[in-house]
Image 1 (tube, one colour):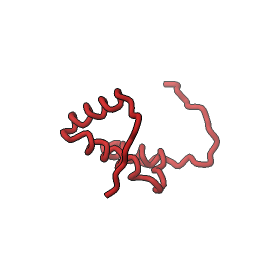
Image 2 (cartoon, helix red, strand yellow; image 1 turned 90 degrees about the vertical axis):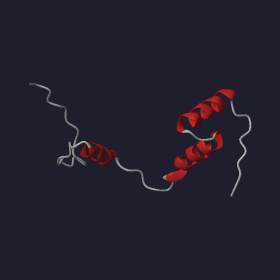
Image 3 (cartoon, rainbow, N blue to C red; image 1 turned 30 degrees about the vertical axis):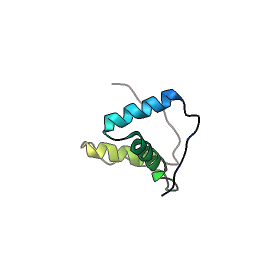
Length: 82
């Protein structure tokens, strides 16, 4: 496995990493590995589109319903009258 040395890391950053590691019940080294692993996990993959992410989030709490596709349509002001 590879090793990585980070020089000139601010003391405040190191302290925050240590506190975060304690909250997660692991060593600072393992916490940093997890942060780096998550940072590059989606590298190269196409990001999920906002509409898809919103639909997935609302579906989890039972608010899923068909929303019409608006791509390519001109923007129009919202009608906020009761």
